[in-house]
Image (cartoon, rainbow, N blue to C red; front, side, top):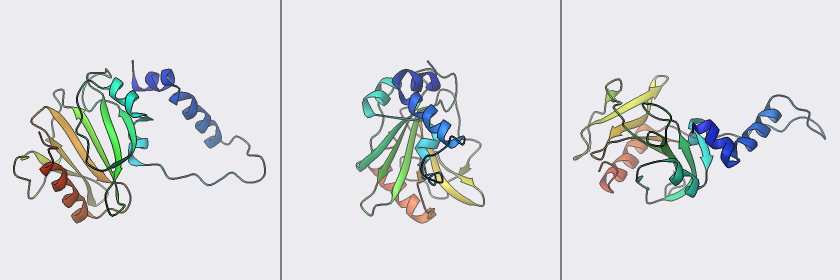
Length: 178
């Protein structure tokens, strides 16, 4: 079942279709349409669901950050066909300073990180770490784990490369590269 069909089967699709109708210019009673609310990175990457739905939609045991999880999403594969064995998991969480991050995890399934630029100073025990960017500045870190996962970390909000790297190092020290 594809992520799209999964969304429809779990009822998330109905909410997405309704939201799409509003966004497509459906009339709004009582005046102008409300301003669109910002979406998180994981909302743009996949289908937001509850934790049980996400666990059912993936075939690996995910790393869970030791922070307050704000939302969970089922993600299309990093590499390969859209099957339960290849789908990923996205987690939006908040650190102690209320900064939001998006952590994504997928089975590597033969995918590689060679197209990404190497991270200048990888963390001990996590040598295959790289950066990716949108625009002119790096805005994320991608790495592979010894258990065969590909993971990414992005700041959901203001992009401070130094703070992002510090958060990544904290996750690695807590086991995000195993």
